[in-house]
Length: 159
Image (cartoon, rainbow, N blue to C red; front, side, top):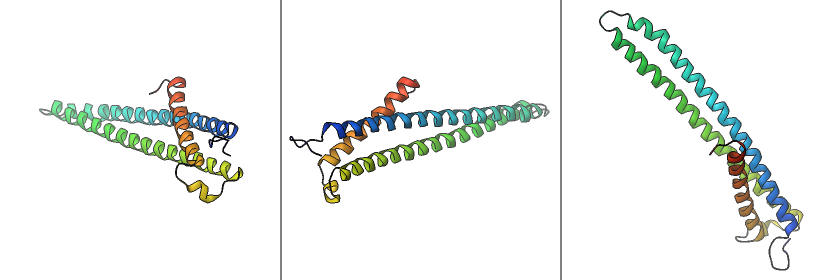
């Protein structure tokens, strides 16, 4: 697969780059959907906290002598509940996206290795540091990340 200069031939390199950019864009769409889903879950937690505040706070406020104080404790408790739920949602989202993007990088590496084997490289050559397969994997990883970032920012307006 190397050309006369020892670099990857343009056609397979372009295929790998286009594939990496496409996979990055698709993973950005996945990320956007996951963020939207997490945002909806956090809105639900806020709504539940607000409803609990009114459900519990109104009767607490009617307690003679300590009603106002009791309602403040309900306010603190319902806010803490919502913050805890949203924190778990955020942690789950970060873990989900991290593992999803790691899997995307592994898919790219496997695709590069497959293309290298189909082009006549053997397993030993694939493992050599600094060779064309490693260069293509590194370049594909960069293009994948750019595909995610460009899609996420340009299409969805997120940062």
